[in-house]
Length: 225
Image (cartoon, rainbow, N blue to C red; front, side):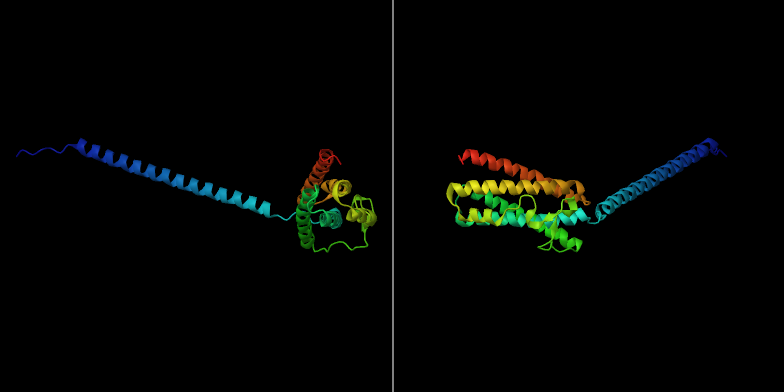
């Protein structure tokens, strides 16, 4: 009987192919598993880093120091007089040449006062008492009304009684003197305050008020005052 002989080599070749396929599938599974593990590790690292950054950003600032509180209390009073000066001028000179500058003072210094009040509230501290000694936080204790740039009642009365170009010139002179006094305190707070946000606030305040003094001088020249 003629029978086709089984070729041993066929079986061997088939087994080799199966083994190679098995190995190929296993290698692919290992690669995919490795990739999945790597992705998970990367995602975990990203989440960790993001959490660490959030935690760092959420870390509370330094506690309020003597310079922080003293500056905020004193500058609130200083700004309050700037508002008073501007309002006195505008009462009699709403359309005067200096009126836009007076309104700008009110706009920006009211905003500053809101921020300073918020910090004082956060620190659990009230505004300074009216009869207190000011500027002790910067080693220059003086009566509140004697802070640099603070105007006397006589000078405020003179502004109230003036109109026209005389009022314009007096407003610019008074506010320049007032701003320069504020710059003196703000410069000190920019280096003495513990909290970075208050140091930055004080530094910007000093820069802005210096700029405004230059603008007042330019206005005086332009208007022939």
